[in-house]
Length: 146
Image 1 (cartoon, helix red, strand yellow):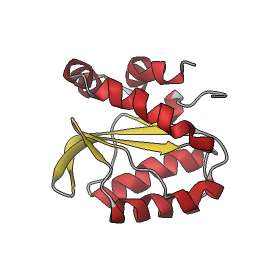
Image 2: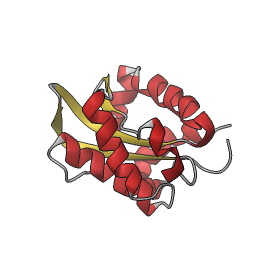
Image 3: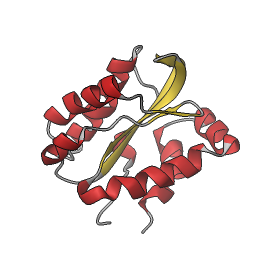
Image 4: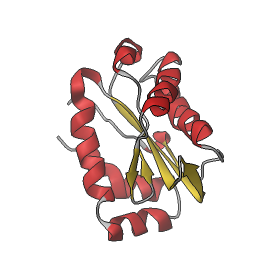
């Protein structure tokens, strides 16, 4: 994988969305701002969610675009938005929306790294209690490792 997948700028410690779709937009907008995807990718994230939930358990959802949206991706990147109040994600409670854009299937490797962190309840607790985006970044920086 080339370059940095996650930067502190792509982390929002207190998201403003209150609905699933707005949370997807919020995670997607960070990817757009980072120059990783075109705005059309956010629509593809909403489309993907409409057909299959990206809820993963442990307060985590990983919204990402449809396969048809591959052309909207300019580079692999991650965005992370944390919510103070749980978002109703098709009946599940989500506190972290992690937007993923992956070039050449790089997102599969990124997904597995995120899944490992969130499968550990102690790690999730640390993420929930992190003071700000910088602290969240410090806890999740390992996703950038080769």
